[in-house]
Each structure stands twice: as structure tokens, then as C-alpha cells.
Length: 162
Image (cartoon, rainbow, N blue to C red):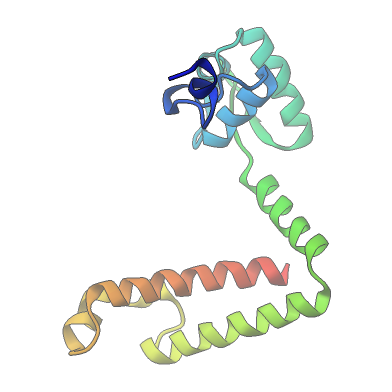
């Protein structure tokens, strides 16, 4: 294998952000953070100095990308509301109001069909095992697939309405 072949393709999973600059490594670490995390843990994951991580985390906090939790030590976590706002803003930029309204109507139709099929108002109210056992035609996988699609349609409709 030549030296150029070794650098082609994605980086190894263990070191996915090694070729990024420190800001991108910290951002990538934040994207993967699911709970409040200390600056030192973020710095370790991003392979940088804690002082550098603190500087970028302060900047990301100012932008709303992360939420800072005061304490000893202070912790940071990804601000999911910021990323949701970005998705909604991108939808508005990429689609006309008519396209968005059409998509809301399509999703509403799909949701209404699921409500009628399962005779409940939400996928959380469905006992998937009972439905599958009482149906000679639908397997548990079919029911779970419907419930996942239904929940996704509800979330997507909310996003398009916003």
C-alpha cells in the first residue's frame, strides 16, 4: 500500500477528529455529548488543553450551541434546542411556504391513518404485543415499524409546522 492510499478515506473510528483543527474537534465532541460534561473530559476527548477547550466552550455557549451548567466544576452539554432551530431554519430557507404546507398535509394524512388503524391518538398508547397477537396478518415487527413511522411523522409534522 502506498503512502497516499493510507491517507485516503475516512479517519480511523478511534481518532475520527484527528485531522480537524481544535475548534472542530471540540465541536465534534460536543455533538457526541449527551449529558453535562466537564471541561477536562471534553479537552481529553478533543485532544487539547483544558484552557483551549474552555475558551471554545465559552464561545459555543455565547452562540447557544452548548449550555453551561454552573458548579464545581462547571459542565457543558449540547443545546438540542439550538440544533432543532437550525433544522427548522434550514427547512424555511430550502422550501416555499406552499411546499411546507403540502408536507404538513401529507404527514397529517399519514398520522390520521395510523390513529384510525390503531384506534388511539398516539403511538405511545399502542400495546404492540397485544396488537400483533390479535392480528393474524401483522407481526410484532410490522407493528413496531408502524409505531416508529408514526412517531417520526409526528415529529416531522411539528418541525414543518414550526
